[in-house]
Figure 1 (spheres, one colour):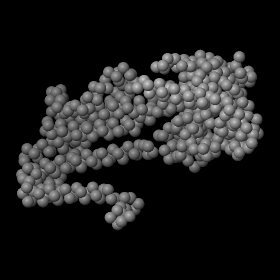
Figure 2 (cartoon, chains in turn brown, purple):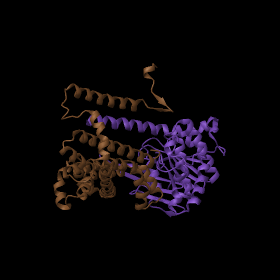
Figure 3 (cartoon, helix red, strand yellow):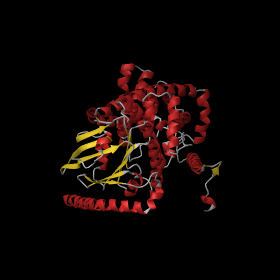
Figure 4 (tube, chains in turn cyan, red):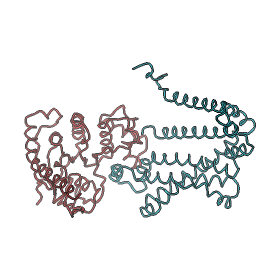
Length: 260
Length: 278
C-alpha cells in the first residue's frame, strides 16, 4: 500500500471519507468565490461565500434565528408526533384489512409523490394564517411514507416468527404487540425518518409561502429586503439544521435498535 | 391398521393423517395415511427425501396446518391447533432479533405472567442447559447460527413442553456444528427425559439421536418402515464411527435411495414440463 492509499486514522476511526467530503466542500466554496471575484458570476445574483459566512453573525444578533429555529422545531415536533401516531395507526389498519389495503395503497403512494404544498391555500381558509396551517401541511406531506413503511414492515415479518407466536398460542393482540410490531419497527422507523424530513421541508416551505412562523419566514423576509447574503446564510442554516436532524434521527434509530 | 405397535402407550399419536393440496396442476396428496405413536421419553425421527411431506407433517402435529384428515392426539386428547404440550423448534432461524438471549428464552414465561425476577432465573437455567452461559445479554445478531438455534431450543424448552417437535433444526448448519449440537440435544433429551419428535432428511443425525426412525416414501408421503435403533445410551457423536452405526445408516439409506431417486426423476419431469410450457 502506498502512502497516498493510507487512510487517515485517529484513535481507531477512519476519518478519510469525512475529510475528503469536507475538503471537496471547501474547494467548491473557494471556486465559487473565485468565479464571483473574477466577474464570471454576478455578485448581485449569487453573493460570495465569504459574505454569506460573514452574515451568519447577523442572523443570530439581528434576525433572532434561534427563536425562529425553535418556532419551526416546535411545528415540526407537533407534526412529527401527529404523523407517528396517525401514520402508524393507519398503516396497521390498512395492513390488517387486505381489502382496505388493496383499495387505498395506490392512493397513498400517489399522495407521496404529489406536490401537497400547493394545497396550502385550502388550509389557510380552514385554519387561517397561523401555525396550524403550517403543521397540517407538514403532517400531510409526512403521512404517506409512514403509512407505506408501516404496511411494508408488518407484511414483511418473517413467517417463522409468526409461527413461533402461533406455537406459543398467542392471541391476536399478543401476536401484534410481541411479534409483528417489534419485527416491523426498523422499517416503520425508516418511514418515520422519511416522514419527518418531508415534514421539515414542507413546514419551512409553507412558512416561506404564507410568510409566517420561523425559518421559512426569515428567508422570505431577507429575500424581500434583497439581503442576498443573509438569505443564502439563512438557507445554509436550514440545510445545516436538516443535516443535523437527519444525523440525530439515525443515531436515535441505532439507539432504539442496538443490534439490527 | 397402522404399522406402529407402540401406539397404545404413546403420549403422541398421529392417526391416518392425510393432507391434500390444490396446485395449478390439480390436487396432490402430500401425506397419505400416516400413523404412528411416540412413547413418553422416546426420541423418534421422521426421515424421508425432499418433498415427502415431512414439514407438512410437522405443521399438522404442531397445529399450524388445518384442513387435513385424521387425528392427532396428545395423552389421549385430540388436538386441533397449537397445543401447550407441544413445543416447536423451527428449521429457519427463529429468534427474536430485538430481544436479548435472556429475553428470548424468557418469552414463554412472560406469556404466562411469571414475575420478571423469577423468569430471568428460569431463563438462565435453560440458557445454561444449552451451553450459552456468558451470552445472556447478547442479541441474536451477535451470535453464530448454531448458537441462535440453541437459543430457539432453550426458548422452547423454557415452556416445558411434554413433547419437543423439531423440524430439521440443524439443516442450515455445517456438519461439525451439526454433530456437536446433536450431542447437546441428546444430552438435554436424556437429562430431561424429553419426548422428542425430530423431522430430518439427515440419516447420520437421525441414527445418532433416535430410539426409532420412521422412514417415509416420496410423494405421497407414507410410512415405508419403522427402524428400531438399538445403539447403547448415553450416546455422543463418537458413535458415528462405530460399525453398528454404519450398518444402521446403510440400512436406512437402502430404504431411502429408491425414494430419493423417485423424487429426483419427478423433479426432472417437472422441470421439463415447465420448460415445455415456456
